[in-house]
Image (cartoon, rainbow, N blue to C red; front, side):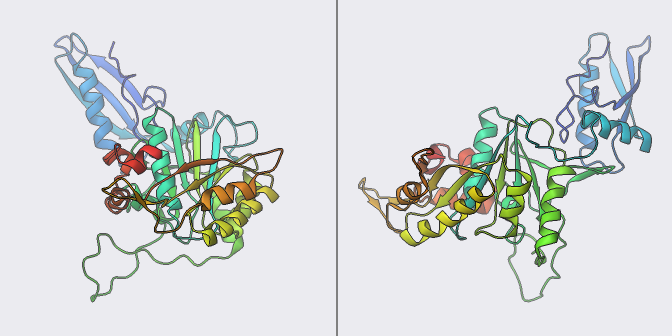
Length: 354
């Protein structure tokens, strides 16, 4: 018997035998295996990988001299059966309801430019490297940057019926509005762009709410240990929508050491509390630049993280400073290259704190 259970669909992250992607299997007297492989859709981006893995698994079986993989595509009925199986037979609904075992962390900030998205991307990858099953929603609809930070800018999700399969980057399942926004028409005067610029998103509240709701219903993340949400800065519609859709989410506030930034960061946490979410900690980013002589240059001041945590703490619910991340050239370089610092330079002081 061919051992095809070892072949994992790279998008769904389950054995293809569980996904009903294998039809007939036979081995003739000469040891030639014939396998019928049914892909989920026409043009499946993982087709070549799955076909190769099926072939390799077949020829690794004792008694098999060679293998022939016959590739076809699921029928609409088979696709519908697959999506129903993945949802556990339940109708399409919010994936991370009150009974979900997934820990949900909303990463927020009062203002832009504090490194919230960079921290979120690195936290997600660090968790995945630690063996957790991690999903990441780029909820910053206007200022989406997660795909670029993770090196998958330009990637598109795969749609199977009404189900959307998110791309995977460094072990993290990722969805972002960038994956659905068309490229902006190019300007002949622009040169040196590493990727086509995206058109601007200019939506009001109802569209923003619907987008986040679709991310939480139509996108299939599967069983996750952790779901991270990169929120836009401030206290706008998306923060309120996520408070309504995911009241059990735990909130982490990102600030810089600067007193003005810490004061603004406090407001985003207060909005989260108004929707029933719990603030579990503060991360102070850009905490200082280590010098060769062992001292630290505090370019953005000091004490903002401690101050924000103290203001947000109550006798019933203290809010700690979870970490103080130093300024790092490697963090910036990793963001530009799409290779998070926790992977590229795990020995870097900032990576170690994250």
